[in-house]
Amino acid sequence: MMRRAFALLALALLSVWAQPGAAQPDATYDILSFDQLAGWQKDDHQAALEAFLETCGDMKGAEWSSVCALAKSHPNARAFFELLFRPVAIEDGKPALFTGYFEPVLNGSRQPNLRYKYPLYRKPPEVAGGSLWFPRAVIEGDRILAGRGLEIAWVDDPVELFFLQIQGSGRIRLPDGSTIRVGYGGANGHSYRSVGDELVRRGVYQPHQVSAEVIRNWVSRNPDKGIALLHTNPAFVFFREIRGLPPEKGPLGAMNRPLTRERTLAVDPKFVPLGAPVWIEKGGRNPMKRLMVAQDTGSAIKGAQRADIFFGTGKEAGRAAARVSDPGRMVVLLPIETAYELAGGYGP
Image (cartoon, rainbow, N blue to C red; front, side):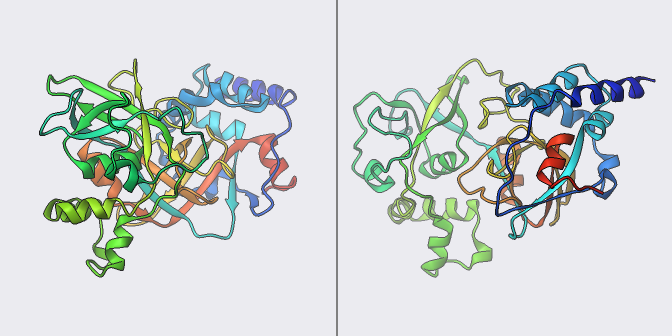
């Protein structure tokens, strides 16, 4: 009876949904059935619904407002997704690739000393969004920001700071046991260049040997050359201090809401609406079939079938994230009217 009543309410809301956004000309949109999603019946749909609720209220469009209102009524989770959405396979001709990311925890201090000497900076006021500024080698090597009061904290490891910039958010554990949380605050406009690829180019390692741990150890063994290696990546990220975020919550993502461990996905918003549920079928050594939510973005996440899985906070999450570079597929769940509009009105 409850499922029937929920279905009737869902159908009534279809009449007030707004027109969906335009399809991308370089992509195809194919509607699937839920039976075509391998492992769908076995997933924890309630966990996915809770992650969806973190951000659905910020989504634009009457169609999303309607489904979010229903989500807040605490429906049966699986019925909610099956009745209000249709799975849409979005393809742009490129193979699927899943990687992982996490929230690192660094040791640091509010004041510099012999141990804590590598600063995290706020964005200088003269740095405009999207414009090119000084590269990393100048910012760090010439210390052009020193003495301007832009430091949030100082940490004890330049490689950990480098990877913090790649992740975009993290926690700084202070000597008294308290913690600072930081998030992405801007960038210098330069494109990221992989230091792992640079080590391969120099003949130091083979491609299959390179990992975050290998880079960390190499820099530790070669301090001067190591800093020079990090400077080959011209991209530089500034931070902002995040206050009032409960410690049990994940970092803030692109929607300025907390991320959920192993339920949040970073996507390319050109193809996948931020806040949309996304079914993933990741292959590799640790296959993953589950419903996630597109709540974040990344500079390296480009393409309809490209995604980054958020694995949580700390070293164990970092190790899990580092192991992921896997094929598979992702299928976006879209409100019914939106799905059929993008697919040209055809479905199974």
